[in-house]
Image 1: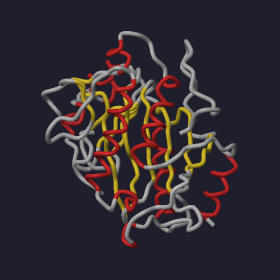
Image 2: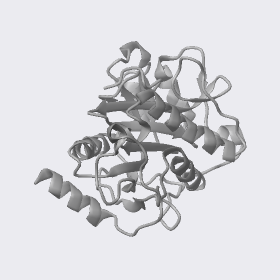
Image 3: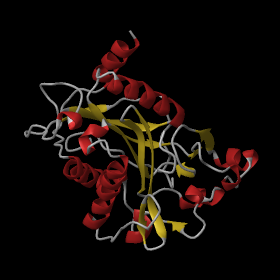
Length: 289
């Protein structure tokens, strides 16, 4: 586990989330769209930096859109897939989802940063989960794009700081494409616009394989951040792409840019591949068998 790394692809032809007047039912069952991650160039680096996995496709993998999911079963899915990646039974993966309203606190978090009591959270339909990442407390909810790369850090020279900076750069580049100038704050993890935080990061590393990841505020209910001290940071506020642009925006408008930025940051290509539930079910059966 990496403490402190949390101040805290779908696309092209893949089905995109749609916002309706009534929130869709949050399901713990995922129906993913699977896409191939493949780059035409072989991995370049020393044997120490070689990415463990499929020798025929050293830069191959899959990206999965999980739809809107409850937090706990998606966390459990990550743990299973991380174990599979450590065992070299799986390639690098990128999971994308949108959670139901949930506060999560890392192992280095502070209980006093949870401001709303059980009754208040229940009245607003917000779950509370203690998790195994580093960092303090944060919020996940509808309108927020959450990315969980299950990747071997050999891809970034087994350098956790480099991995975090690349994740931040993915999101900074996404904001730039939308005409928003995002950046970093010295000594803090995440992506900011001035003193307002628009994206949080938090990871857990085991045997050089990452899980957890990033949360980008596209158009969440910002009032839900009032129930916490986000990431334990007192001298800043939280914002969203929707608020910064001054217009409505859906995840479907942002995801293509997120994927292109991820491709650029990690040297991957994400062509669409029709697979999905059958692929994931099969891989999980193999891991559990």
